[in-house]
Length: 151
Ligand SMILES: [Fe+2]
Ligand SMILES: [Fe+2]
Image 1 (cartoon, helix red, strand yellow):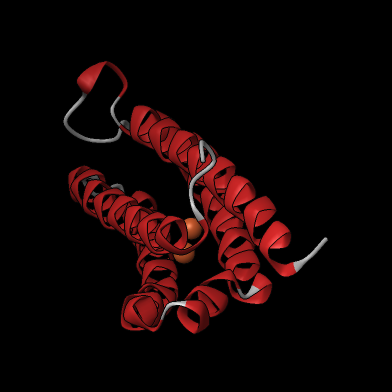
Image 2: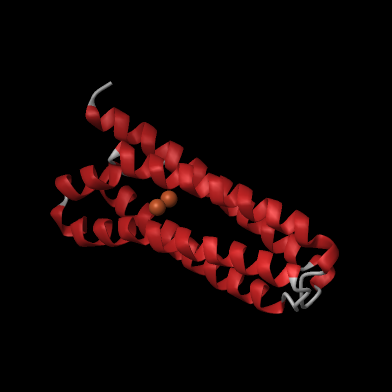
């Protein structure tokens, strides 16, 4: 396969991964507020933590793939006009992972102290929003250079 073919394969893989991550985020959100409960019920703490840890592992793997496959770097090389945006989204990986780590740690501490877990839900909503914006920006960069799955 030549470089362009490799890149098209990677675009399909990336888009499938983004859909999978989106499902994992939705699963966490649903586990946090069963029946639209305002705070995470203490009885759900372990389940929510398990899903958060799974999401964390998926994200580590996903970000590693994006960085090692070099698709963002290649997009920046082929099309210098997207270079700044490619760099910006790449740097967001560290921030996103560190925020998710904080959420997990805070939830562990608060559930041990039997404190209200209301803030965790809204903090995770903010995280999910930032992650969605990140993935959308990344998809725009990649598709503007290599085309989309439908092309
Ligand atoms: Fe990314
Ligand atoms: Fe991504």
